[in-house]
Length: 304
Image 1 (spheres, rainbow, N blue to C red):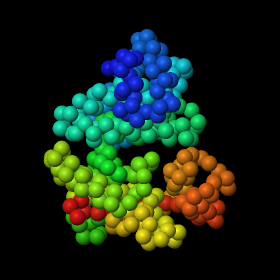
Image 2: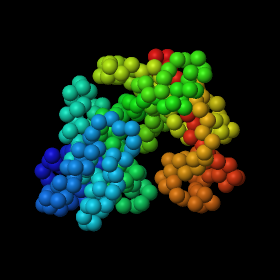
Image 3: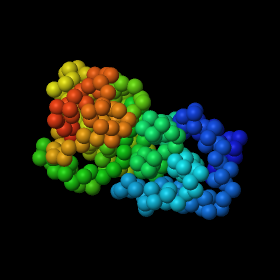
């Protein structure tokens, strides 16, 4: 399913693959196509990541399968898995009538994942963690609609209990939309979020009419109530928080989550975290003072 070497750069550009990676990916094509065992492994992995909507992030041990690839491909093997899968998911999108620009913007998360890999490791390719995330896109579960991403999922039991306690009748497992905030896409302004939500309401009603969504949810460190100690009330993050009713409280610290998002590497030592921006100072100073960060859980009625 891979295009030939002359056409491959066009596919890479459509998927937002960083320019510094394009020559390397094209050069590796011969090593991929010349080995029947590698082609077979790629096809099996591509079938795996484009399978039905999943309840788990790791389809059949994608990381274990990637370890079987030739060392010469390195972290680019997983890039080739998604290049092989791209024609299938584009066909699924077309069958749903999903506009080409939405399809292209959604699958461009491959390039974003590669940029995150290079920021953390200093080398090209795609890591297993980012590959797990991308299975959502390539099985038709997640869509980029303006500033936000929307994942078709089932409502979790803990979130459902919190929503029922607030007076809205829902049941665990019923269709819901989980909002995600992608990196490298500009500020999280109220206007950008409003436009995205308006687009999403029209999009899902048109293309997934069989899935009525009662609520939207979000599970993110950006919903940690402690952020209100550090940010002004009119900041983009606080105004984003205000869209949501509080869900269940997570007692487990998630310190590596903001460290990973803000600094690019969740394993950076806290004492060495830079203080170049106000957000970096907020995240790092809070941890250095002995505090912890938590993933916040919120929801709002989808038709509001």
